[in-house]
Amino acid sequence: MNRNGRVPRFPLQIFYPHKECDLAITAKANNTEDSVTDASHKKPSGTLRLSTILDSLSYRDFRWIWIGSFVSFMAMNMQMITRSWLILRVTGDSPLALTLVTLTFALPMTVIAPFAGALSDRFSRKKLIFISQIGNAVLTLTLGILDFTGAVTFFYIMIIGVFNGSLMAVNMPSRQVIISDIVPDDKLMNAISLNNSSMNLTRVAGPALAGFLILLVDTAGVFFMVSAIYVFSAISIAMVNYSPARNDDAKKSVTADIRDGLTYAFSEPTLRALFIMTFIPVLFGFSYYALIPAWAREALNIQSDGLGILLMIMGVGATVGTIGLAALGNLRRRGIVMLSTSAAWGIALAIFSQMSSFPLAVPFLLFIGLTSSVYMSMNMTMIQLNSDQKMRGRVMSISMMTFGMMPLSAVPFGTIAQKIGTPDALMISGILLASFTVLFAMFNRTFREIN
Image (cartoon, rainbow, N blue to C red; front, side):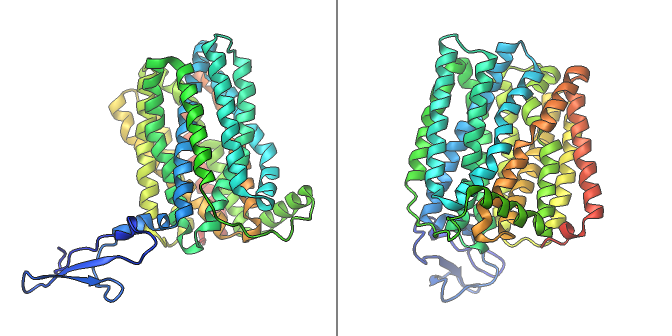
């Protein structure tokens, strides 16, 4: 009961999403007699709408997209930690090898993303996502067989990484933009945050589960499980039954579509600023993804299960961040919030890198997870909200291209880690992220005024 003598409303839409069935349970302040009143007739002040966080899940198709994203990201995170552990085993604990495989995974995203974005604006996004998930299932199964038979080599891991990255370039723009096909713009921040929360939940469960499973069934067994999870992701997206709007520009060539998309994206000052502030965190903020297995061994001397716990902790912070963002709804002064979040992320990464004990590392890992997830969720939302509906596939593919440029930081920082150690390499990347964010904030008024 709140100070007005009312009990907060119970969000029955969670269970009956297609009906207006919120009920407000109120208690009179001067007696103990309870009554139930339809919330559509009376919306008392001071009530707590617990359903706000889950607003977008009232759409059936979005629920299937969320489930598909959850299992797809679960597979991806399990695959990432398992592949990293396999690389360390095959190469004799080389941090540079970790970054080189990241290179083979991410660079195809840069090359293929523009074509994938054009395809996303031309064809069924549902079918593109389905094909990418089946392809990943086949590739992961192949890697598992190579590992199980003892035929796996670093070269094979890199080749499979190229194909994984190519399919990711097809998957991600369509998976992001299909949300705006189904959910109205006023709920897009909520929907994207919830979709990203599925990724962050798997960052909690995926690495930890993979770390323990490696001890039980070895890396090959985990790859077989990941392949099956990708198949379930494909089934989930097949359950989506929305009818996409027909694109009148489909008669143009793909290259013309790509050219139009690039021209549109970089001629808009707000979009241009958003892309720059996608590139800066990708270049400096995500180096820890490739290097954290090496950092865990150097700084804490832990094994695969301990590494899984570290990534799980970071995933907890990320989950809290995205769920909190989903609850906030129409957040104001988003440009200032994003800049502050990016700078805080860099500072936390620099401090975290110098931690030498598990308990000291935990709060910084939580904070890195929170700030990075909040920033990227807001950035992706603002890119879509500032894009024409017909251009969103191509625009989001440019965002994916920046993620494909991640090796531009991973490889140099991997080389630095070989020379001076992984902790100091991560400290440098964190300092650079914070510094470039502050400089950009000082000289780009357009981004500061995003609201």
